[in-house]
Length: 233
Image (cartoon, rainbow, N blue to C red; front, side, top):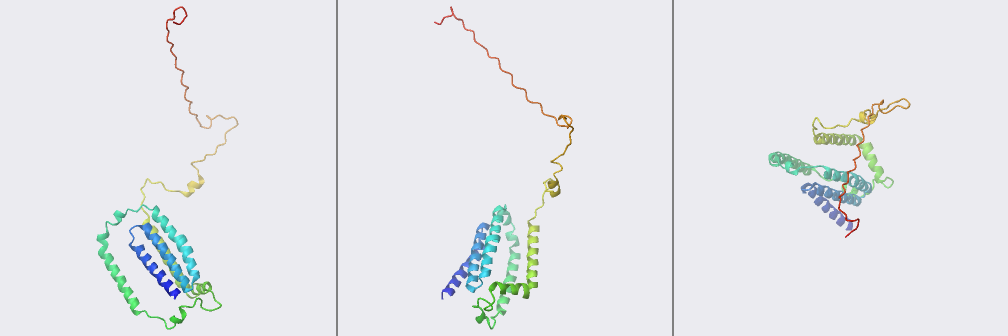
């Protein structure tokens, strides 16, 4: 009873936070709701008996990926007014794509059905008494579904390259670019010389700037007052 109640609570919070990730206007708030969704998904994994997946979700996604998203969103200078300029122009195309995805979901859920032994397997924490969750997960991913795992890695690689290409902006011709070879060699910054003994700076091509002349003292004028008899009145 307690496990079922906890499942529905965490699932409801997960769905609500996922909706807020998509509908939030502020990207920083979206990332924070995404972190909340990850925590609730980890709680659902714990309830299902997959503690390894729960810890990986918290350590990797919350501790690294979500924090990286947050820093990137906070550092990028995003012009939201410019992004909203083409919203009405591309709204029909987005509506068509959304309709196609909705029909695909209806087709998938319409033909989906429970496996015959799903009721007996859903509460089992491990495949067997002698196999842990981590070992069973490793056998499935790296033995039974190794090719699908590699394909998933290639898809993520293509997505990463596409994101870099889309965000790469054309720089003007006079912009400064980093040249690692020149920077490491420092050929222009450091010049080695072998001067003869007791050579002056002039022979090395080093000319000292003349020192500024010291200001001349100003003449102080004395006022001559008439003194009568050398005494004071």
